[in-house]
Image 1: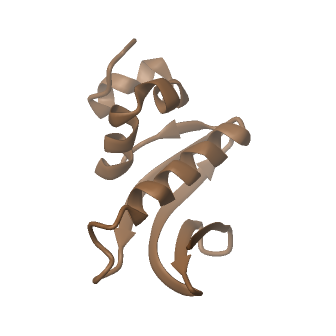
Image 2: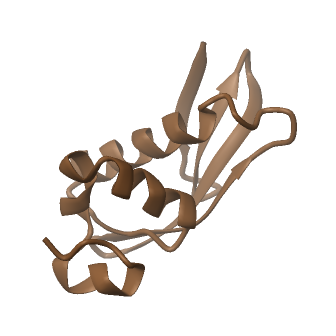
Length: 104
């Protein structure tokens, strides 16, 4: 069972299995905006859905914290595109074109 947490000291969300880090999503917060520049799945953990679980947690947390999202990381954009009904509204409408996201 994977666990995800916000490691505020490192400015990243982390996903671990049996207390072993398997991936992370870096972020920066500026006011009411969180930007995700990079997501990493550590070697040997690819293709198991850990990155998606991690990013979904991060996006859900951003919503709970009422933060707008700037998805600079290609994988964060992919999760948003794959689930626009769940996450597209987190990206400000005026910023969506810059990330090749649907405007509506």
